[in-house]
Length: 343
Image (cartoon, rainbow, N blue to C red):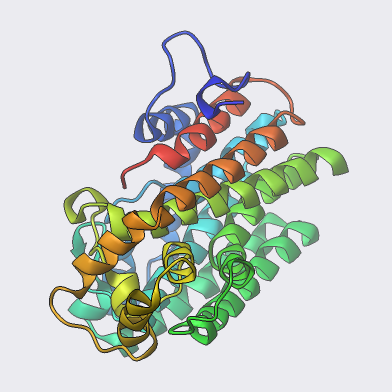
């Protein structure tokens, strides 16, 4: 089944682009999302001005708010009428924001969402500590929702994300990394929060065990697809469209799937190139362009996108086990278009 012709994806005007699909989902959740933004702004208030400045720089820089939207839409999918889903969605976004602050320090990133990163503007120590503050505020919001199971889901996700960061460091510059090793990083760093965000919405809405599992699996598969495309775009995308530097994964020696595939299919001279640039970290001015050419020539890029489409299809299959309503249709469009995005 083609992603664009899933029975859950609307047929009236044809498939939307990914950006338009997210905008549509935001429109469905507009009132809830406004409440989430107010909750986040309240959580960022501090008597220490730097905390508010750094947190505000990150949170207000834009972004799709995709993860909190998953929580909001998943709750509404099951006709939830309370407001605890707003607190949980805000907690999810604060967890995401905290991980971004920490990631940018670990990766020495210079650009995010088209703006200089917090570690560039304020420093590494400051970014890490404000990230810790956002984590603490997220946990306060989780507790205020008063649901132990949801607290367990989101707190566990926060721990898994940290494990994923460590696992990525362990695979960095390791040309022996396999698809399974790469997938373990993706499932921890990205898919865990997507899954927890979706599952938390279903749980707070009182969904039964099968529906809850469907939403958890939907989030996981969407998260894997999303990260696969992200990793492909680091070699195929444009810096202006992405709002962040391209080639960062290459410069940091990350064993993302395009490199895993390209190295596995490389001849002797090209393997020497990958050993020098990835394993040894000795890179010249033209090496990123050569890496891109090799990734295209070995079809590593095509196969990474194809893998992403398989996970997006799984996400659509998961949604087929949930109620059929406008929220399900909007989530399905996001999943269907997630592999076609350019940013």
